[in-house]
Length: 253
Image 1 (cartoon, helix red, strand yellow):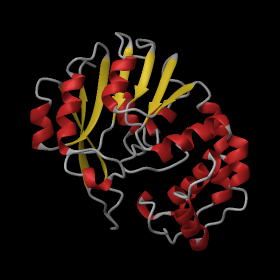
Image 2 (tube, one colour):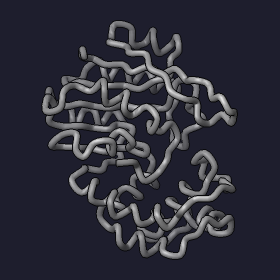
Image 3 (tube, helix red, strand yellow):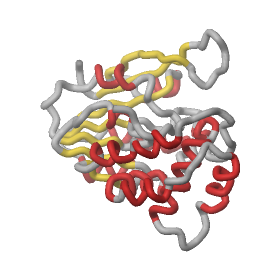
């Protein structure tokens, strides 16, 4: 199934190539998405492992996932009269930081900002048609998929320590090198090194997505690096260029 939202750096176009690099089904007992985002890889399978974990540091994003999991009907009710509307978009933008909102009210406003903003920047109205009613109805299906998923809001280092076991598979999709400013959450250039040092010590297996650049290739020299590419979908042209990426693993195929 598809994710119910888009997010910066989402893996909609690359998810099958990522899944192709996973260890064999049944060889890992827990699956952890460390930088969850929209969860495109999570949703790409009915179930990856007996234990599944979704983690992200963005509080609004995690609140939306939790409300979708536990309160889908209340969230749909809050969104009941939502239209593809510039006025409603900017109302949601102005209200989301107001004190006193319930978690469901905040989740609904964040959902509107995601669905109706250009490039998921949560700032500018997208000015294009979208069937919001179908998107709202899809929340029920997403809730069922999330019913057994643990939802966390932790720093990546803590998540790695908490869930690391020999039978763990971590999928990591951090902000790409030198693109940190495009993400709404704090990820500093030195965090790339902190992430690499943490991954050096995991007992389980990991698969890591990154942009193809000299710094990342040097940083993960010695690991299994697979080159992939995808269409650069944010560039408006008839013939879209290809964007090169790396899948980095601490295991063989």
